[in-house]
Length: 479
Ligand code: CS2
Figure 1 (cartoon, protein in one colour):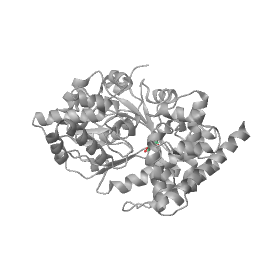
Figure 2 (spheres, protein in one colour; figure 1 turned 180 degrees about the vertical axis):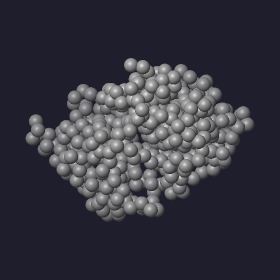
Figure 3 (tube, protein in one colour; figure 1 turned 30 degrees about the horizontal axis):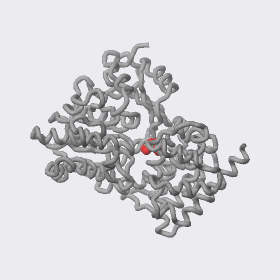
Figure 4 (cartoon, helix red, strand yellow; figure 1 turned 135 degrees about the vertical axis):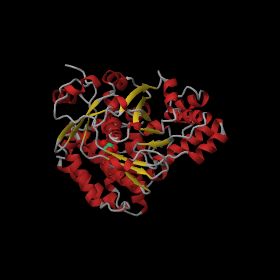
C-alpha cells in the first residue's frame, strides 16, 4: 500500500478531508513539547484550521523521550489521519505538524527553533509528571532531570529546562519571549508552569528570573477531547478508509474544546476564529472539566478494571458503574463548583456521560488508569477536601480510592508493573498489603498521594474502609 505523504495526497479516497492549505508552504511558528495522541488530535487540529487563513503557525513537535512519532511521521511529511469516531465518522488529514524532533538526539535543533524570531508560541502536553512539580505544586528541585538541567542548562532533558534555556537564549539574542501555553490537565497550569520556570532560572540567574517573571505570558488553559491511544485496529481501519498507509493515525470523539486565558500576543494567531474560547475565567472551566470528566473517568477506570471491564463505553453499560459516575458528578461534585458563565453544570455532566457512552470509541480503562498517583489528587482529592469542608457526605469518594488501592495490590500480586512515575514505590506498597481492612491505613499513610489532614479525617477513613470492604468481599466471592 502506498504511504501517505505530500506527494500522494491526491491519491486519498474522495471523502477524506484534506488540508485546506498547502502544507509545504507553512512555516513553523509553534514549538510543541509532547506530540502524542492528545496533542495531535486536539491542538494540532485547531492549528490545522488556523493554517487555512494564516500559514505562520506550523508546529515543530518535540518528543522528550521516544522516537516513535518522528519515525512514523517524517516519511509522511508530517501528515497523519485524524479519525473522528462518533455519531458521524470522518477521516481528516492534518498537515499542521511540520516537523518532529527528538530531544535527546536533537538538543541543538530544538534550541535553535526556540530562538527563531518567527517561533512565537511554545505549547506542551507532557502529562502531569512532565512539569516536575512536588506535591505542593512547586518545582521539585530533587527531580533527577531538574538536578541535571540546573548543572547542565545548555543540554536540558526536562521540559522546564528547555523552556528556561530557550528563554535565556532569546533574551541574549534581543528577542521577546515566546508565549508559553501549557495544555495538560493540571489546575492553574499556566501559573504553576510559569512559577516553576522562574524558580528554575532563579537558581542560576536572579536577574533573568525577574525579567521572565515580568515579561512571560503563560496563560492557563483547559483542554478537552477524548482520545484513546492508537491500536492496530485503528491503523487497519484508517488505511482501508483513506486508501493510503498511515503509520500513526489518531482517533478522537467529535467533541473538542480548548479554553485559553486571555493574554497579550501582538500579531498572534486568531484563536477565536477556529473555535478556541478565550476567557478570563479559565479556572471555572478547568475545575468543572477536571472534576466532572476526569474524576469520574478515573473512578470508572479503577472500579471497572476491578470488575474485569475493559473500556469506558462497556463500563457505562454496567448499571452500578453508570450510577456511580452520575451520582459522583451530580450529587457530590456539582454542588462544589461555580459554573462558568453560560454553562449549566447539570447539562454539562449529562453531556459528559453521553460522551462516555459513545459506542464508536473504545477507550481502554487501563489507559486512563496510568499515572494514578498524579491524577487522583487533582481529579478527586481536591473535590473530597472541599466536600469535607462543606460537611457533605463523602462516602462515594471512598469508592475510587479503594479501587485504586486494590488495583495496585492486584498488579503487585500478579508481578506486573504499572505506568506511573511512582511505580516502584507503589508496587512495593501493593506487595505489603494484607487483603484486609488495615490496608486502608497503610495506603492512606502514603504521603505522596494523600495529604495528612485528609488521610486522618475519620470521615475519609470510614468512606474508604467501607468501599474497600465491599471490594474485598467481591474478590472472595469471585475466587
Ligand atoms: C483521561 C483523559 O486518560 C485519562 O486520564 O481521563 O485523557 C481524558 O480523556 C481527557 O482529559 C479528555 O479531555
